[in-house]
Length: 242
Image (cartoon, rainbow, N blue to C red; front, side, top):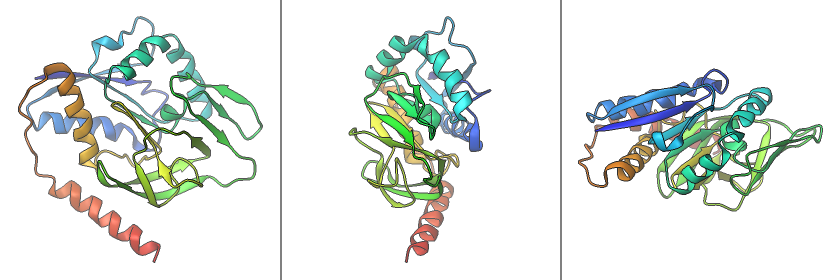
């Protein structure tokens, strides 16, 4: 079986080791005998999302995020259609934020987003950055662990990844993290998120296989190392709030 992943703007949206997510997808496909072709997309000119089976967008600074938004605006309608059609995607921090209507800076400037989904992000003046290890309890994925570092607070009414036990998540108010819309995952979790959370990785791979093949044999892997790392972080973080 073959899958293709579009990695958007790896030269600009590449904070906090997020390339590790692409490596995790590649390896977990490889261990199952699935050939995952990775195409780095640095310009959206001529790009057709119908040619890929999943895509990844990492995090970046405000400047890089603005540049990326300009690029994505060229394929906004196709991008929205891909999300609505259920193409699996992982979007991190800035890559998550610009899917919404706007990002409001601490100076009050509104940086336009793609307005693909109905949410917004704002940075509040004199408010602290939301930084540190994070633990999320998820009905779909179990315990999710990672690291967050963001000034923006995101607000929406969509399904989330889960409830924040330790850390902040979308904002420092509602104790929710990320977004789960069709097969799109948006999250503030760096770290990167996928190596320590194999259930999330396999969700994306399965969604891509479902779309392309319908029926297939999905080999179960030995996740002892990954789950031990996850469990270790869960225990440390729970102890920190006692």
